[in-house]
Image: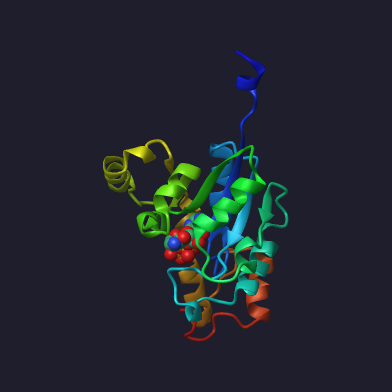
Length: 213
Ligand code: NAP
């Protein structure tokens, strides 16, 4: 085998999400994906203005970004990107990926996100283009059966064969929606997310009203 073929393939994980707030399920999913797919690094990219959400229902981008920074700071293999926070307009994934492709030319890119989000992939801007640029890792809550989705996608979009992966993450029983509801109802959230993020939520009075429900 030539040296070129023996060359180690570098793989970058891209953890995309609204992260309102980031929680331990996200962190475990990223770490499991890193181990399972041999990723050198996982880059967390909080959405700036999610294209599929009413912006009034989502906490300010800088707050979600700061919480993500607090959550990942102890893991040297995790990094945080402000790409989508700094970009104006809606945060289309295809635009983010074009920038990452240029920044990391020698890396295979793996986009990690929730399986529920992945089910909607064909409604995303330039979905077919996205699927040629990167591979997907769908992080699923326990009990989520992705087989129907994967079969349908492979039948309707044979070009995606082998490019969409699926990872069951028991810790994803934790959800941002549930955490926001717990705060609103005065229920405990300790141990569902890093302590630094819990304190940040408390200090900034996040999620105590009906907004961001
Ligand atoms: P979402 O609709 O808020 O979340 C869907 C589900 O996936 C939720 O159950 C969520 O759980 C989970 N989830 C989201 N991100 C996750 C992650 N990284 N790891 C594990 N579970 C995750 O989806 P979203 O967070 O706003 O969007 C996900 C990604 O898709 C973002 O990067 C977004 O920019 C991208 N996206 C792009 C387009 C487009 O380009 N047109 C459209 C839609 C989404 P939690 O609530 O607990 O996180």
